[in-house]
Image (cartoon, rainbow, N blue to C red; front, side):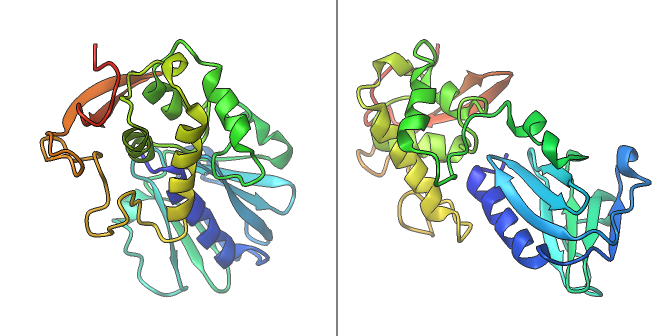
Length: 263
């Protein structure tokens, strides 16, 4: 599933292309919206919240989409070929005089009154990429789940909105604790949360989710099961961790990261 920085960058690019312009065409290829026509409405802006995209339109309407595992939005100049996938994977098209925004494989496409956006984002924790949210607020949200494993808590979007497996995995490595460490046992949760947040913020403008500083080999432990740890040479371990309704992959170094393991 895309991380919050991927969604933030998508929102920024869509906003740059569409905001302030009038839609000349819309095409929704999902049953619920098949007869909806948004042409003539102006796009006021496109914003992200965690992993959600919100297109705000004339008439106090919001188009809400979510990428889930492999959805994406692509921008094309009118008349240019679409290359985001086969035509049958297109779920939504928003066109202005200058751009065609094409949504591929979007599992969530819905319209709602802008005043009711809280029905979508109200159940989420604070957005980790929102600069108006203090680190202390994020830490308080995490610390309120003292009896849960930190890997589970950081991936729970109802606690914090935006973190995904890459940043949680790398953040826990840099902090030196395993994903199964109980929140109550973390000596300095502020350092963990603020470092992981800074890591995501540093990457959000260019699309490369690097924690090592090397764009050719971007991660310390994520996706490196069985390979040598960059710090100690120990083999990176892989297992799975329960996170809410999901089972997530977990990567860690058994030497550099203190705390319990799976089970």
